[in-house]
Image (tube, rainbow over the protein chains, first blue to last red):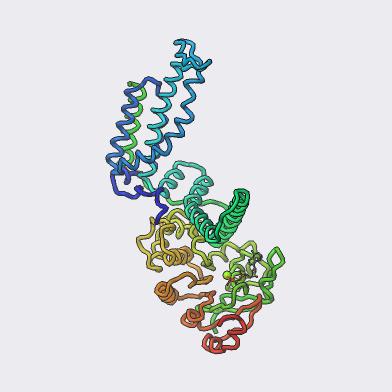
Length: 255
Length: 235
Ligand SMILES: Nc1ncnc2c1ncn2[C@@H]1O[C@H](COP(=O)(O)OP(=O)(O)OP(=O)(O)O)[C@@H](O)[C@H]1O
Ligand SMILES: [Mg+2]
């Protein structure tokens, strides 16, 4: 299938892949919380978190190029937001560097914040990429469900996962049909065609929603969500989680 | 005399926009029978099926094993009638095949180990063992159709109602689907345009057109009546 980017490496078989989804969710998201709450100059701690991610990545056998490529998709957004901070933050202590362009100054504390945001968000991004590329989406959902995320949220996410690709295919089919009928012309006309496509996409999705609902009702769905099955926590999951959290706590407090 | 499983008595239905889709349809199906419903596009076949488990109105015209379908027994009715829809993508809405097949039993509040047993049994029945953790999106159309059948088998229904069994299937898959339905046995209602499939599977057929029952009888005799078939756009 061509739309498999979401699940490309999540079904490999490695020690990390075999861990219970809950253990991974808590460890990788826990790492983000520990990391983000560290003081800005805790460089050794950042190195520690990076080490953790490096070991996990190596054990998981997910190709490093995949991880790096995925992170490159996200990081520009972070930079886009963070790049203004050094210019906005007035500096009371250091006085800042004047750029000689009107009133524009770069402040030292602003630079520190900028650097801090870059480091922390990059670590967080890698952490999330590792979580999602070592856990198939259905298991991730089940894990979140067992961690007591509301069932309605889980169900919405599961529908999104299930029908996103069908929707993409539907759009592709419509584009093909449009191009087959020699779609050209002035932009006003194009805007009209695109508007019609969006409208018909909405209608199709709406109709599919009704048919899916009928199929659900036919199998005894009454509006009460029963959720997916349970998985069991094993010794290795407990151990992994224990040592991961111990390591993070150490980094947070001692380094 | 064998037991009646399904009784429909003078069923009339109009969609909210005024389209009269069914107009005084009556029919009866015995336990263990396999009955075909044929008719041109827009005849009302799908609408008829949606009445079998009370999706469209519960107006007292439909009885399942003697029980009149009404609001209070919908849950029982939906366990007894397994509905397989035209497009399997509408029926497979869970992240994995396992969860899809388990959806019905879980709604019936069956304990999880019994659910797992039923899922295994249903997937085995449709020849898809080992597909539990796959996502429906990655399956072929024929496989999706089989999973869709498994999703209702797991509820252990008394009546299987199947809409457009063979549309979009290649000849080989179609043949194996016919084989599968023969093996499954039980009481089945099969809606189709595929006269050859109906003649292979069903002892009895009903012709539906313009919301009305046009003819009913032994498959061989009905399918031999070329004029009748032509008059109803089936040939
Ligand atoms: N949701 C709806 N709202 C209004 N009219 C509808 C709706 N669904 C079906 N109809 C109409 O009811 C009639 C019967 O439709 P139905 O889908 O039951 O036909 P069918 O025999 O299943 O046809 P096909 O072979 O194309 O599946 C048609 O005239 C159709 O246009
Ligand atoms: Mg139909």
